[in-house]
Length: 599
Image 1 (tube, rainbow, N blue to C red):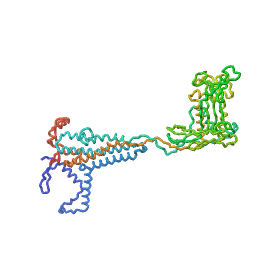
Image 2: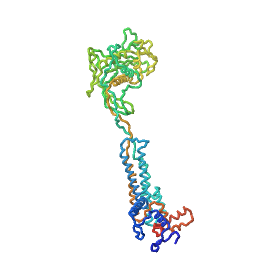
Image 3: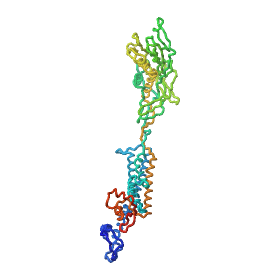
Image 4: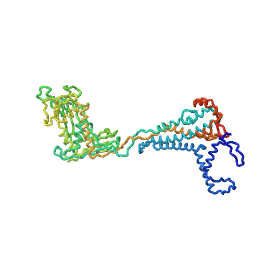
């Protein structure tokens, strides 16, 4: 018998039948030395020691501690089941988190933590938890495999590679799960997407509308005894001279995007028509040629052929020769059409009317920019005699939805009075013999605009701006009148206006869950549970010891002596691997070692 083994002697002096390894005996002795020195319950009374209740308690405690140690050791599946439960719970937690935030605004957490970070963390815990039952299952299947039948020794390495997640033994169900689990991370990142949408803000948005306009100042500069307030004058000058586009009201928008219901407001409307067909040439009685003749239309005149452009204005009389809502009529005439060539005689005439009206406007704010569209205009063509109205004949307009807007008579008279001074009749000429109606207001400009070029003489800046608009823009005169009307409307809406409330919307980033990407993680979790159950059933049926992936099992229960001899002592590791390919082994019982791999 080898010196490494001995045969313990029974109390009766008889040796046990089987030899016991020395190392096993040493471990047994070490374990006994660590235990409390109490007598067992089956010791005879001949020892002379009486056992106490504490001895029984200590024994129960040792049994309980041993059961706990066994639960977390290779002698049970407790750890694998526990990790599987953790994996299932964390996967369920990820589903719960996604369900909570689905279609909700993107959460804002401290330290820049995002929802993707949480999902990635939970996915990592799930993956790590599932790796335990997978690895243990592979390790145990390895021993079951060799227990059931002789198999190539190389299968030992294939099982180990599969348990580490490589492309080794892909034929096994568990290997497929392990490979699929590699995609848990990328798939978890695809579950949550972050599109944008427009949402309604709880902050108020409003745009002004004027239901009436009443301000006027008493003054002596006009024939009516009233003058407009300075904001109205400023608005008119902006409409006449600004090149920045039409004036706009100042709505309240707490966000960059707002929508408002249609609003009805007091406004100023302009209408322009071509009256070139009624133009006639007239000549003085002493005229010797046509160059001394001028042009006239509906009471407006170009004084002579030297005049290239003229503006003539008309205001309603007190007795009512125009609709009460009219502010002023303008007739613009010229001898050179903007579509012709310089010096070519092509007379033209346009009549424009400026009047109070009611407008229905759709307003929106997109990306911080206000856009307004006039959907309808309502005018009042009633003719009123204001000779004895004593300032009480307001100009009122009622819309089809019964909304009424008005401007007081003093406010209307103040604007009209100032307009008679501002829009005095005048003309423009490119002839140095031009006789200005008001030499002090004469404007001389070396101007190049459209077909017009050279030194030009203007009666006033107002004449110059309309002259410029006509030759510079395709629809110059109507555009200029529209900008003037818009500026006045904005002035109405800026003075004690009634707010029209709308909705403020903002761009919101939200969470949208693509549930289809959950399919793979769900498969991995479910398949891992099935795989663990199959591994447990296989172990029970084969009667294999529960060693799982323990490296000590290979050290304690490795190849038997006869099999090791076949590899010899010569040759390197690669040489031994070549010999291993043709060798079949199986797990067998051994009276000394318990289990060994035999060939």
